[in-house]
Length: 487
Image (cartoon, rainbow, N blue to C red; front, side):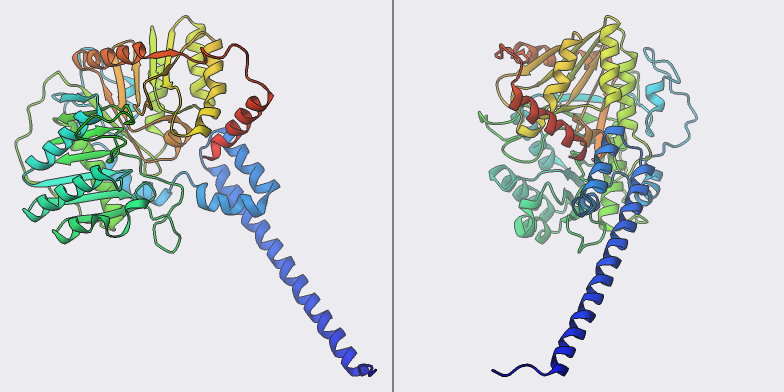
């Protein structure tokens, strides 16, 4: 047996030492870098206007599990983009009005008017879309009859027969010379990436993806999603609400599994406000901030004292949280009744306590949610909040016929809000959202009748549960509620 030479052993020993030193230094530098990165993220987190529960959840993740918390925050933690808000806020700032805003039922200087950057206007005509079939037929009709431009912003464009039919129709109109611009959220329309919308491009239409998910592209975010659903035709007509573009949400014929949703076709001055929001999002996605898009000039309808609407945009591109603040104002100013229709109910502490205060002062609060939504985790997370409201005296109803995807708030049967915003933390504080506030008696009465029909098709929350939830159910609800601020 031949023993290794002493020099060979010395070389191995010195190499091992050098490797150990290099590894130690690299590990030390990695630890310091991670610590500094965590400090930077914590500083950024504390500067953002978040709810305390949300901030605490992220702090615990970053401090206790930094190897998981830091990358998760980089992917999903951002809430506001300062530069984006600065660039786009100019489009949301209302011009100086020579005439004062005075409506018979809503006095000048009403706080709700001032909670948003776009002022209210009158002279609007509204047709409410109460079924997926009605929404699809109105959308298809407007696409067929548009003469100049079609601007559509969608969170989901499904790869199904409805999606294909809409793509085919838009391609046909583009080939006929109508200017088509289709803005798709990169995450919501992930399944329809690639060549699905190529027929529109080949016919001369324009397609843009909002906020790519992967960091290999510029202006990306895995967290900040454009949840607004807006379609604008010839700068005169707009469709807005909760409907996505797919069979699950709309279609030419009834389908038993279709979501129950709510939207509106609007004609009048409010279309101009919706168009500003579309242009801001389109220009950002296509990097054309300095290239405003001009529409053909047409005679707008004359303003009167009917059809009073206020368009409120909220999201990472808007300073503060005007949509959330306007909703909170509605709740706080309620004199008799508050009704909330939403697919997901995970409110922040301020909104929840405001509802409970109203209940304690004798006001009536009703919340209508689907019996089971399409997201089981949110159903677990909502249970605590719904029970707390129920125990405080609220009427909690679960819609039985299927998935209720509509979003609306009705206060005192005199003012209503509808649009794309859900009553959850992501919609209220993270997503790009749109809300329409209606102040006209005639229009609000139609929403009241729609809500009454929902109530007739609903049952009391947990009416089939004789005993309080057991330990496993309670644990699952608590864990879901803990994760809710991170979703």
